[in-house]
Image 1: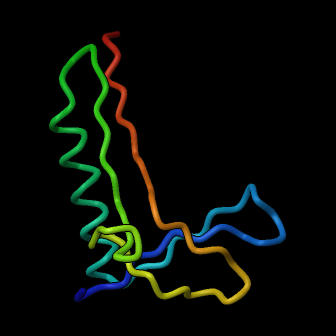
Image 2 (image 1 turned 135 degrees about the vertical axis):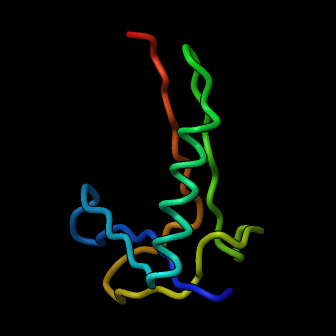
Length: 84
């Protein structure tokens, strides 16, 4: 993998999510989100999955960036395109 992209949850506060990424990793994620939006048809929803290599994917890196956090191995992003 040529970039860093991790999602990590605080051990102390399960309501905190940390996103760590290199410029390349964050660009990959941003482009993936834009593609998800473009691919979601009017009146429907779509989703994208991001997995670490520990979970059979290649989108997320598996190296914990914050030793006090919990690494998240699967991120699922939903796009809801409701008509106005």
